[in-house]
Length: 62
Image 1: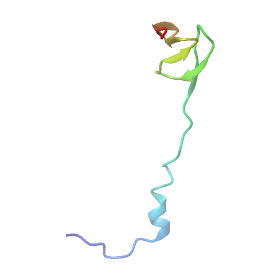
Image 2: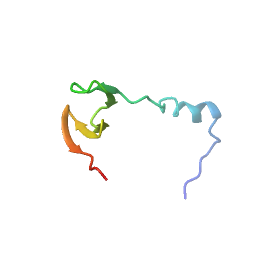
Image 3: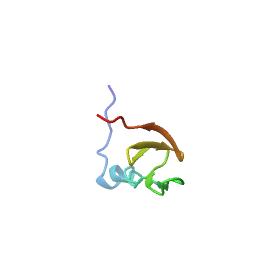
């Protein structure tokens, strides 16, 4: 099994982590309802499920 010849410094170790960041998701506005939602995701509005501005499904009355 391979072992490192020298100890990796904290600076060198942390340089690889500089590109890992939390990014806020992009928000889209639905053309039909005007509601904000995440891109490529269906969203509920007034008991209806919308995707790309079209009604995909309606909530059943229980």
